Image 1 (cartoon, one colour):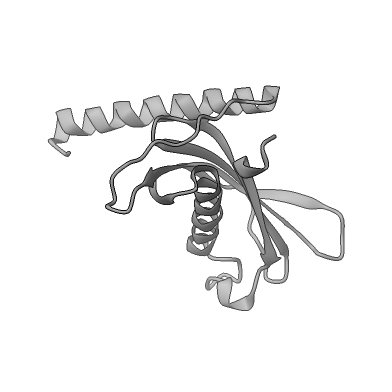
Image 2: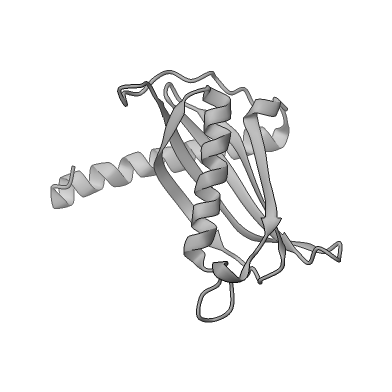
Length: 159
């Protein structure tokens, strides 16, 4: 796999990251996902990138203060100017081997030039069967998002 196609952030969940229930706040997890996926997109495109969408963010298990958090982001599909990134968040007690997936999602970024206009990105070619399967899911999500945008425009007049 191309080393520019993926990145991983690792850090400890801190007391300032928690909500009133004592678990890491969902908004904090979304921030981590956005940061890791931005780093992945910028690394791939060598450009400043902006978030286009976040799809199917799943909150599977809570993250606790003191757990070691890993946020892995990898390119799974590219369009002309867009990059579709699969993100998996994992957590573990740093003193133990057991690791659990806490979140997963797809994030889409667009590379832009200095004036903020979309700019072409390098093409991603799947290297493994898993890459190919994830690319199919990303394409399906992209098609669904386009249909949803169309439905909003037609039904509600949103643009």
